[in-house]
Each structure stands twice: as C-alpha cells, then as structure tokens.
Length: 83
Image (cartoon, rainbow, N blue to C red; front, top):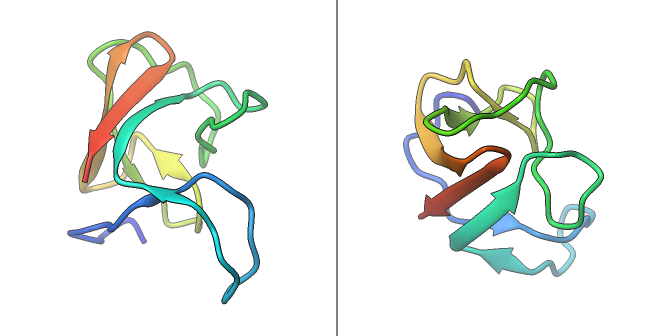
C-alpha cells in the first residue's frame, strides 16, 4: 500500500497467497519490465539516477508518486533498497 511506513522484503518469485516465495531485503532491481528480477511499475516511466520510488496503491508495483519512498535509483534503470 502506498502509505506503508515499513516493508519487510521484496518477493522475487510469482506466488499465490499462502505459498512459499523467496524474499530479499537488500539489493538491486532493474526497472525495465520483462527482465528477470525487475520491478513492476504502476505506470511505466523511465527511471533515472536520483529518482525515488515507493510502494504503489496497486499491489506488487512501485510508483514515483507514492508518498513514502523505499527505493532509490542509483544508476539509470536500476534501483537499490535496504529494508
């Protein structure tokens, strides 16, 4: 949810609710959808160095417009996080 103050990890696998999934708490993700281990964006836009993103109101997606930012773009097309 876009107003979450804390997130506990990023799932790197697709899964159904209640099933096991791999979760990471620190790392880098590409922002180009279609790449393995990439983010999903609420609305596709180019992510460039310095952009900050947070959890979208749409479950499982990130957004530049989220009020609380958890991800920072440190290189064009790649975001970092340390939860």
